[in-house]
Length: 271
Image (cartoon, rainbow, N blue to C red; front, side):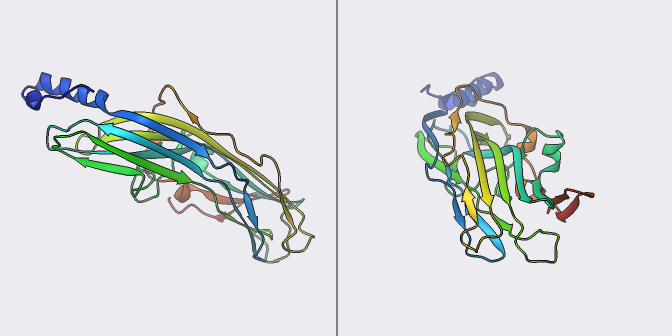
């Protein structure tokens, strides 16, 4: 790892060289990414909703940051964005409900932030980030990690109906994410992308609504998920992945009947 001399910042030209050396000296010693090999579990304990829990995506990295010669703060952490979402709940011949991200669906943005909704642009601020406050005399070595999974509830009955009769016949879900390991200078907002991971979660559930509760749903393929890809070349982070709204606040639940116009069931939290 190159040494950064303490008098490095004496002139503008030298300072720019030091910034470059510092950036290039932030190194990822190890990065791991996986999806648990367990299948999605289905919960039929409620007479109102079906619940399912997917396996977890997990990412961890060991990072080495060189000494910081001046008074500045760097944050290293995970940023995640959703680039594709299909989330359809079918109710036989009546139609389907669909969770949608309108700007993503319309092609207005490449990806939408999957931040926790508080600590933009970070996925979270516990194990997901590490803050280094300069000046520091020694290098900093640390681990950061994150995990993600789906645990939604889907109504047995048609969501726009006053009836509570079970009509749900199948669930289809297919989502793609990009997860970046990033170092950022809090004063200048300079951002260095250290690693890029791509992963996908797919899900299919068949439902026979006429069967007794507890015997209705069956998991379709895939029973095991594709493992994430740690890319050898980093991808740029689209601007929409760094700002509000996040996916949870932007998503809208639509009812799309076989006949008739679509209806908004749950509007987006962010307008």
